[in-house]
Image 1: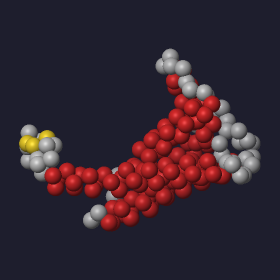
Image 2: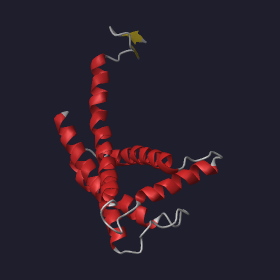
Image 3: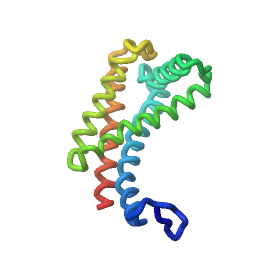
Image 4: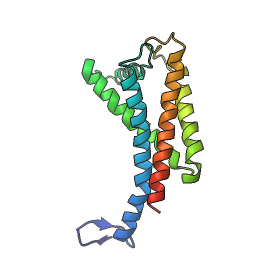
Length: 171
């Protein structure tokens, strides 16, 4: 192990420039994932406040988080605390998911982002009931599943756009 001038210890042969290069490679991935997650969350949270029959993915998320905590013997938070933890869990998990847009490189980011978004959207529409999470409130409206899929598709495309832009800057 070697120590650099700042006192950081690095494996033999690892220069600060190499660490900076690794950070440059991960920056677009992390920020693309975050862009996708924020897009889905902003659409869900913003539109549900003004549109009847809007997707209510936060309700499904709250049920999933509370059920998971109960399954491991922990008392889930209630009310606003449950909502806050659900939002955090959604942002983290969706960021990790949408960060996958980078696996095929910038040239394939658009199709991969679209595929990731559509897959997440279809899953968000089709899986809650079989997973024991029930239906979204107001899910009887035909626009609810369409909007749900659209939010996740928008997240995938936002991740793709962000990744392509940042990856191009870091070259």
